[in-house]
Amino acid sequence: MATLTHSGISPLNIKGVSLNRPFIWLRQGWDDLRHNPAASLAYGFIVSALGALLLTFWSHPYFIAADITGFLLVGPMFTAGLVQLSRCRERGAPVGFGDSLSALGDHRDALVRFALGLLVIGAVWFAASTIMMDMALGSAAPGVTETMWSGMLYHVSTAQSLSYVGVGGILAAIVFTRSVVAVPIIIDRDADAATAVRASYGATFADLPAMLVWAALIVALVAFGFITMLIGMIVVFPLLGHATWHAYRDLIG
Image (tube, rainbow, N blue to C red; front, side):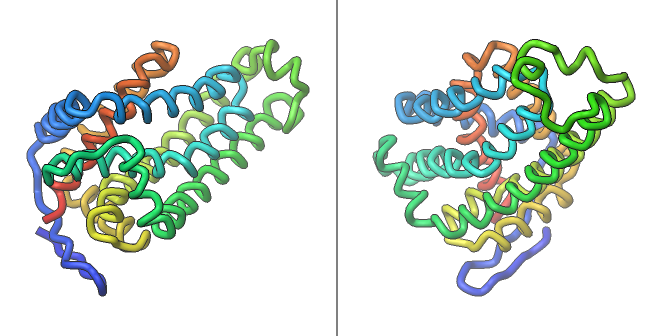
């Protein structure tokens, strides 16, 4: 068990978990969703609406990178509301969608700082995407006609496609490592963003096998959400948001 300390909050004891715990987090998250479906699914509808823009330009990395960069800024805010719903349910306090938004106001500074850290990673993704596109097409910002109907993926080589996916995968791994328990710690412990990120790194590396399972489940569920043209994301996003709370409760003492 590792221990992280920070002035103003109680010590964060990182606990070991078994490989099957991520599946239990999903089951517990599903229970939270069923307990408060209206508020939970409201977050799912919002995320799906934003994701629809990404799917509109699915064949063009320039717009995909731009959409992902923007989503990294607002994603933690939506997760905070879902975490607040799970937290209140655990404490037996009734809470609705409007009430869950209080978490954003109460912890605005820490959540914004955390989101800005993710935004920096998103900016790197945006820059890398632009460079790769320029190498493939000879233009960093092709016209709208080419963007929407040319089909960017038909103009790149296998090596370029693999490079693009590889860079995106590395940055996604960094985002995952920073985010495992960051938002719940901010909400539950009133921690600052730096402490929350350190705890997420600690939890990831202390429980790496379980975290690999958790990451794989997240990828699979998010992929399902996109394969179903964002219909599935209406349920997937709140499910993962609620499960994040239960991951935090297991991983941090």
